Image (cartoon, rainbow, N blue to C red; front, top):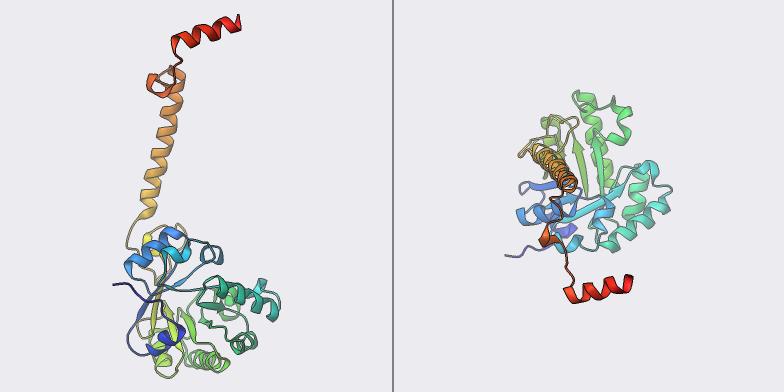
Length: 264
């Protein structure tokens, strides 16, 4: 059965009705696999989302993109960027900028997704790459921040590396959708990076990540096979085993004689 691309209204209507699944992926191959597998939502780099084949391979995945607010420029710049992305097929825009920018974009009917907890682009304010909301004071601050996003007009917020109890209780008390990355099952969406699921992440593996396959080992094996094949080619050229008769074209003998006569 063909799935329907969910609207923002469809996603909002699912609040409190179980968890959807979300990936961050970086290629059309991953997008195609996510579509076939039945992933609901994706965060996609804008160069992938705007590729002419993206919606061919991922027609029913609700797809958001965005830019780091540190390079976004003015609010008008961000508005123009958002408009281009929506026209290119985005369903929502991620915005890590301040609440004023979120409200500005939401007033222009841009579906905005905010970010609380461990936000990499502003992690220095919360103590670096660590969990946020482990004390009553910081947990209450998170709740107020989510409410502020809701009041500013965002329809969803990614909540990253927050204690499960905190994320669950916040989700119960707001109408905005909460997309959990490392914040437990009490939210509306479970969000992981495809590179962690597939085992292609060769750097730090977050505690919340779960590895389902070891693509890195397979890529290493394939790279070894590439090197071996190239070396065999070099060896064949050096020893005369390549090209063989089947790899070349021969001239009819009469035409060869005429060619050689012409040369002489």
